Image 1 (cartoon, rainbow, N blue to C red):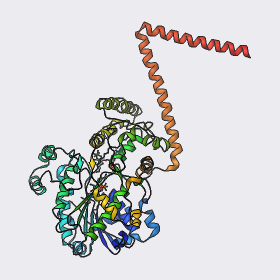
Image 2 (tube, protein in one colour; image 1 turned 90 degrees about the horizontal axis):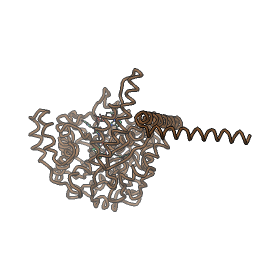
Image 3 (cartoon, rainbow, N blue to C red; image 1 turned 135 degrees about the horizontal axis):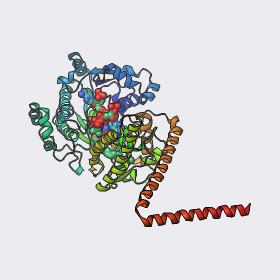
Image 4 (cartoon, rainbow, N blue to C red; image 1 turned 90 degrees about the vertical axis):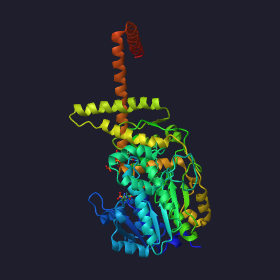
Length: 518
Ligand SMILES: CCCCC/C=C\C/C=C\CCCCCCCC(=O)SCCNC(=O)CCNC(=O)[C@H](O)C(C)(C)COP(=O)(O)OP(=O)(O)OC[C@H]1O[C@@H](n2cnc3c(N)ncnc32)[C@H](O)[C@@H]1OP(=O)(O)O
Ligand SMILES: NC(=O)C1=CN([C@@H]2O[C@H](COP(=O)(O)OP(=O)(O)OC[C@H]3O[C@@H](n4cnc5c(N)ncnc54)[C@H](OP(=O)(O)O)[C@@H]3O)[C@@H](O)[C@H]2O)C=CC1
């Protein structure tokens, strides 16, 4: 039987969401580990004044592609951008491109989605469900299609505690919902959204669940697999450790903590932090593509791609044992930190609120006052308000535990040759969490914030300065409080005089004894 790389040799692959975090890693891995792949057709839209060609060219200059560039400097010849806006009818693909795609595509990877937790329902539905439906219609017209791989999320069914590798009945029939929302204006949709999403926390998980159902409806006509990753984090090994390019999920939290902005967060210390490295997800995705095309399972296979049941890591291990995120950022500090990194995790609402007041709002207020007095625009309170909004949306995921079944993932691993198991490694039993978190933190510094590692001595110096400012501030605060206290209490005054006279006596004694010895 063909190995994975042999299977992809000569194949034309269609990828949506290639400019996104996971899409880029998928493109890179295909080019690097399946060098005989014929062509990658990427559905890309123009964005922020850049044409789709410009965006794809920029993407290929990214450091992520360094290894591919070394192996094959002409790799860009295999990349064919296709203009497409997924929220438009027919995905806004030109008739000529539709003809080209239907004539040549062998396998589809559908990664594109809106992953925002606060996305208005209509837009999330348009992109995550309707676009998936349209892509499936296009896929059905493809003459040689062998597999359709849909990227979902392990949290699509987060209203359940135990999640099997099955497609659960949708909360509502997608077609009916689409029809009903069509005539409603945005205000009405916003008002009824909480009732519609029910026990799910946001429109993202709700629409991803609907998308799974839409995909399942096509399982008789197409060879389908669904990949459900949990919280996708920086790369573990490939193409190099710690690659990450966004603020989503834990990355933004780590950065905010490293910058000394985030000092407290609500999470259940004992709950599993189900992080999964992006390279693991992509290795599983490519393996599932191979298996689906070669073995053509009778019905769509779902692969829960999680770590909790295999190699668990807990939120408490990030927060409580300071050798992880905090110590990593002390060893490799971020530039221009607001305060020294020192974040704590608590599951207690009141304690968290207390620390938000003392460690977030109070310093922000003082800093903004300082900015105002020095003629600058206050900004810290605004930053904290945004941080609190983001954190409140993440807390749902950091405060609970889920249990995912991973039978299909294990079955797939057993089907791989020993060589493929190494090249397309998705065995997270070997993942060393402290090392992974350290590389993750360094990755946020290098690839998200684009900070130079050679600036670390200056960043350390800045942290020392912050520590001295803190000591000075604390001393002044104690003296101030004491002075206020002294002004109001005779007993405090007596204690103060006693301490001062004791110090005075000690100094005189010290001076006298040093005069004698001289
Ligand atoms: C030290 C102890 C730490 C312990 C805790 C660690 C981890 C956190 C806990 C839980 C993580 C759970 C994650 C669950 C994931 C579920 C899995 C999934 O299936 S999907 C994908 C996950 N999706 C997301 O993570 C998206 C979440 N984000 C959003 O929904 C939105 O970004 C938002 C939070 C609602 C904020 O929206 P807003 O409009 O205010 O901002 P923008 O997103 O438009 O961003 C504007 C601008 O700011 C930059 N940005 C974004 N976030 C941050 C940040 N945290 N810090 C700094 N800067 C940030 C962003 O890049 C934009 O910049 P620019 O305009 O230049 O592009
Ligand atoms: N990141 C995570 O933690 C997790 C992600 N997932 C799933 O993985 C998949 C990929 O996520 P991730 O890479 O992190 O997401 P990103 O937000 O990084 O990427 C989203 C991709 O979708 C594309 N896209 C969005 N809207 C449109 C549109 N209207 N037309 C064309 N393309 C569009 C984006 O293109 P553009 O650059 O033009 O905006 C981008 O390429 C998603 O399906 C997500 O649900 C699942 C679990 C966890």
